[in-house]
Image 1 (cartoon, rainbow, N blue to C red):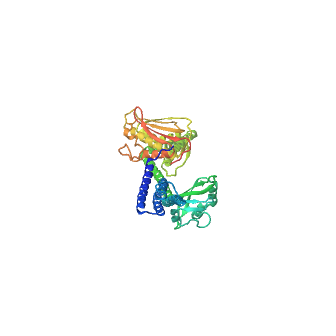
Image 2: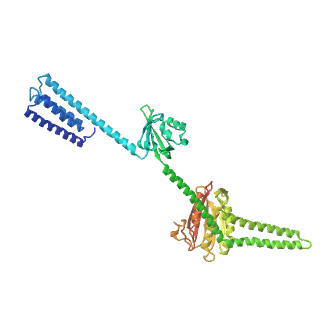
Length: 489
């Protein structure tokens, strides 16, 4: 049982009591003026109708009953009695009651129709002003309703042409009527992106959503559809993608500059590395000439000297090839790489720098590591930056404490982990959070780009890079790379 709404009950009682009060005043006036039954019926009817306009049906019915009783008691013979002597009086009272109730019902219906019309107008206003193109279609896709925003945008009117006129404003490349009809025939909610022609002939991209309305038997009664303008969003996405392309190109350019700069810093060491096999080749060539000038020529010694020349020439060529590969400007590649082999190649480039700073370098490379996928030059750049940073950090350390250890091992989640450990002074605690940010550096003469570039390269390959403290002193820089195919920067 539902609880009684006291506020509603109080409102009904107030209107009813007001009606009864007015009936009492009319009755008093009718006695004073000696009005006839017909006149009193008309006056009572005015009061009942006036109350019905307020929408209080229960109060109206109650007041009609009270008015009928008052007519019977005060104005029909015998007066001051509920008995009725003549059929005319009975008919008059009955007609009054029926008429009062009919008029009250008509007023109630008119009021309800007015409310429905107002609600319909309000709903129409909402549909016309919402920031979307809204329309409804019959089951076959024909237009039934187009909101004002749709009509203003497209210049179409409801029922214009035959069939679904909304399809006539689709871009020709998006029109494919069979596709749309198949989607409508499936009877399921669906959405599509399409270009719609505006009244000025231009096209904008919209996201179209169709929702079916079904009747009691499950058949589609109509389709409701909305179209949201996504042109500005699409343009913003395209601009963002273009900016990302520009950013990647800028990062690649910056990485190339960093490689060239790093190679320039190693120029003296590289020159020393190249000078050694060249000097050895000259010495072996002179020896070969002497063996050939001997009587008789010593061909065995000459052959041995020439083989040494070939060996030293290949060594110099390898060094120069690594340098050329490191500084060349070429698009990123995705190759199958051996991480241990890359570490060995980079250490060969820094061997003279390690000797000059009296640093002991050793490796602990895990065997049988699965290949990684990426750009060899970019990953060599990461290793070279980390090794040179370690060398610089240890260049002022005490004798016996300059140790560089490079390790590889299986990482978590199907990755390979590379660690570069040094015994330098370590990193200040506040630097760990910002170490890989662009333009942040702990060096007095640093630009703060090397580690930022390293992070960009590693992350573009699907890995991550971080730094921790080494025990008992120094720093450890580590990065992981996926063993499965990644994306080169």
